[in-house]
Length: 204
Image (cartoon, rainbow, N blue to C red):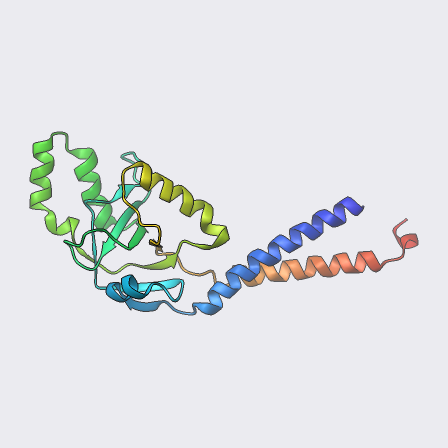
């Protein structure tokens, strides 16, 4: 019985932590913060849910998260100017406007000459204007996914700065899940307190 109680206590505490993390993220970000790419590069992110304006996608430096023709997502540097050296913002995206030219260039063309010709004819697609919206990949819960993506980027030769701002496009703070987790955790803790206060005779 004691083992069950301690197991339930551990589950409730984990749910309480996860719920608080989600709920506090939602309360800090009721709507996306509109920010220019220049301001973001200069001052960093003050909130987690961002709508970035005025940037350019650098598809020439982008990498696939799957490494195969069946693309799952891309990691694309976002810059304030197409000719900018280096980058401060990296976006995980599934935007078909970016994935299609990337897929054609890397997986549907065989020769170097054909690749160079395709790139020259479609340069506007590889440096197109882009205003992604999403949430930052950070914190304890998302750190595992962030670390895997960063390791993949480094393995494929992408020069990622240590202070990179890592955004997951399309992702929004969960509006209900955190409060649901907190509610379940509180109910579980209340049940534990009630059972601990119950006389032993009533449990026999």
